[in-house]
Length: 138
Image (cartoon, rainbow, N blue to C red; front, side, top):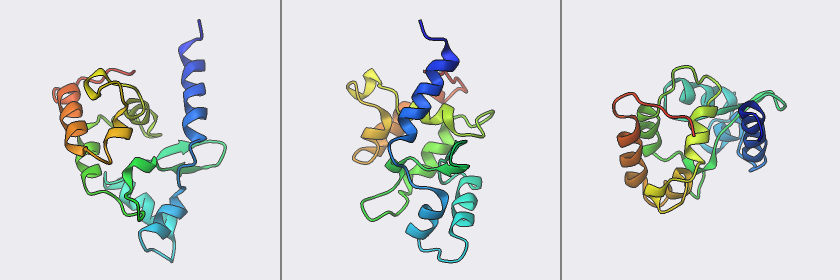
């Protein structure tokens, strides 16, 4: 059996290999030409964008489910992030693990895969799971 820290590290590597955009790329996508990385940092601080810290790249990467086909940030992301517990999750990985873990309530799909087409379904699940402050790490 793989120890949980080793399993978490493996999951991080798998997710980091999905090619998520950096802070600079996110800033450019949303139209900030000067200091685009600062725009992404401001969105993260405001709870409107989830970023996960990549130690090897020394930057935040941003799961792509948060963006529409034209690179714009989906407005429902802020509602989702307000529902998911962020305390003690400065690097964003606990939330990312939840978003990329299969859920029976989503017909065996992960929240990040369902969110682009049916954000209300993911928001309802997050509300059920975390509405009373319960956070179960997958």
